Image 1 (cartoon, rainbow, N blue to C red):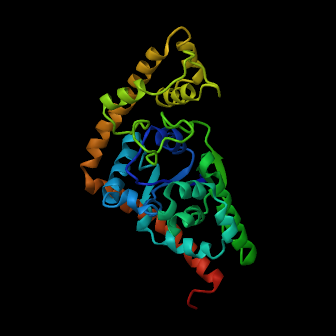
Image 2 (spheres, rainbow, N blue to C red):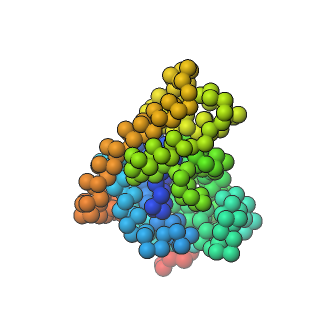
Length: 331
C-alpha cells in the first residue's frame, strides 16, 4: 500500500533552537515510518530577509543538514533536499503568483507581523513567501502537510490557489490536508512569553539554541522569568511555567501531568535546575553527532544529491503538466 506523501521544510537561518525540535523535527521523526517524507532546507525562503543570512547561508545549510541527521532523520526512510537546487520550486511559484489575488495574499498575518518588525526593509519576496510555500507542497501532490498554528493560514492559501487554478483550467493540483501535530507545542521565548522562540527576538537570552553550551543552557534556564506562586502547574495564568513544562516534556517525553506530580512539593529553583539538566542530557549527544556529520561534507553533499534526484523526478513531471495545461509549452 502506498504511503501518504509529506513535504515540510525549515529555513537555514542559523538559529535552530529547542522550539524547532519540539514543534517540528520531533514530529518529522515520528512520521518517517508511516509516511513517504521529503524534508527540505528551504534556503529560498531564508533570503526573503537577506540581512539575516548574508555571508552565512552556505554554512547554515550544512549545519542544518548535519543537525537533521544528528536528531535521527533516517536517509533510508526520508529524503532531504535543498530547495534552491530544484528550480521547479521558484518556477511554479511565479505561475501561482499569477493565480493569487492580491487581496488574499495581503491577508497573511505573518506578513503583517513582519512588516511591523522590519518596516522600510520589508521585501517583495517576504510578501510572496506564502506563494513559494504553496509551490513547495503543490509540486509534489502532497497528501498532508505538517502545520502548526502559525502556518495554517499559509496552507489554506495553497489550497485556495490550487482550487482557483483547477477550476479555471484542469484539476491537476491535489489539495493537501493539514496534518495537525499530535505531539509538540509552540515553544515561547523565555523572556517574551507572547512570542515564539525565534532569533527575531531582540536578544538571545530567551532562546535555547541546539548548539548552546551547557553553561549557557543553565544560565538561561535558571534566570528565566517565572511568577511568584511557586506552583508548578500548567495553566493560562502561569504562561512562563507552562512554557517551561512544555520544554521539559519535549526533551524527556514525560507527560505534563507526570512532571507536575514530580514537583508537587518542590520549588521553582529545583524545577529549573532539573529542567536545565534534562535539556543538556538531551542535547549533549546531539551535539556530539553533529560534530561528526559537519566534518564530512562529501557525505552531506551525497545526501543532498540523492534528495535532489528524488525531488526532480516528481517535480519535472508536474511542471510539464502545468506548462501543457497553460499552453506555454512547445508543441
